[in-house]
Image 1 (cartoon, rainbow, N blue to C red):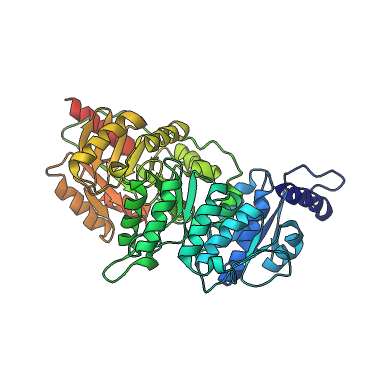
Image 2 (image 1 turned 135 degrees about the vertical axis):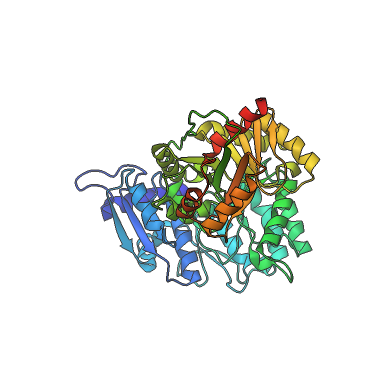
Length: 507
């Protein structure tokens, strides 16, 4: 089926001007980007469009369909256009469907009143080259999930999918995604990724299905998406759901690449770029009269944060005026390498920005809970070697003795220079691994109050690690706080901070 889609697209390229006039089309390389604005479209239209995007982009070495769902989509498209595209054409959903409806295998009809059918339609679109729709489009029907009794209830439908579809999908990636989100589905379809929407906290039935799914995957698989906060019950919130989800996938040795609101990955995945950075080390000698402070922005493990909020913060005029640490998702090197390359290139140029892996290395998990951490540590080591990012943040609430033992192993097996531990209470040097514990979180305080808190801690601590809430603070806030500190406080980047911790430990 992929062959016939490819052949049809090549013929379409010749007919519609995808190649320069008078020249034959370049096989499997599009020269035009079709851009569709989905921001004001209802969910059903968005799902139709991104499923068509996933099917079409999967068939071309250079993808050519791009959706606008987020404010930063045009900025990333402008950046990617430097990789060789000639032009872009604005299209409506109807135009896109009319132009390419003959180049997909058929339709998978889902029921909006049965959210689990959206997940199944996502899987089937990827496996069979179809597009999803809530109503008949007048093309061949591959599956009608609305009427087939196999898909009437979630448990029966998902068990069928686990038996029949999972073996045909990628075994190193899976997605847990709210059925009301279209953003990442183009990538799930293009990469043939098994997709579910299940409750990891309050539903024994859903938890059993998640356990069955996680138990079938390859070791240290990447889980895309996010566990939806809609599953929070009375007295619970999104964080409660998140913690339950992380605990569950960690028990099976997997990790999360948070990615619920990142569109166009079927487009970005195709552009290979060298995402290589280096830590900015300055000639420093440990001074016992100095209090060293480092600021590290949170939430970079979330690829949608890297795509959206981080790009906004990156444009802050104060960036580059003070040493700053930024957490990022190493998994971007696989799914959107050009995006990570931009941050790496800009960080090298600024000589003030350091990139650090977000929790907890290659992906988000509880390292001390992993039954077999070695595959995850190997992925983290490979990512560090490939990107030059040689420090990570870690969130893990396992007992202290177990976490200390895990940190020892992590230092040996990942080759990281250090770890920034979030709210745990462990600090020191473990062999070659420096471990800094979160001292203050910069969130609701004013910059002046933040400076006073740092100064108060400085009476008893030579090193102060400030974790910056990236959703509420920006580089300008950090700069103001740093400028309000007394002279004996020195702001350094995260790698200098770790290096100075090691120098003090040797004395």
